[in-house]
Image (cartoon, rainbow, N blue to C red):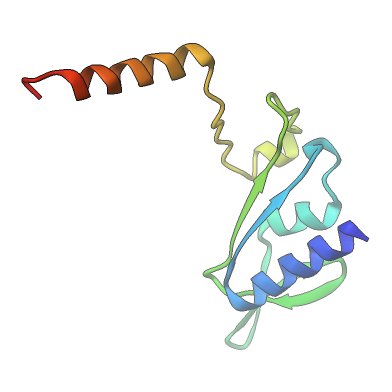
Length: 113
């Protein structure tokens, strides 16, 4: 059920050129349909662009963007997926967070500005 809803959302965003943000618990078990979208094998029929998603040709608007997030701190991303995406790690350690906060407090309290 959840898989179907996710694919419906992706297909709608593909057609409308919208940004789609999905959460994947286990990137290693991502569906083949998601991998097909990541591969971006665009087909052209006349002036219309299409992507094949689960044996269905879905119109593709070039403004489409897909962001995949995971709640895992250190996700296992298979090589066939990592070759297709840009991985951004937004994790901050508590030491880095303390340094950032200390620098901000110091800058705010410095009369020389």
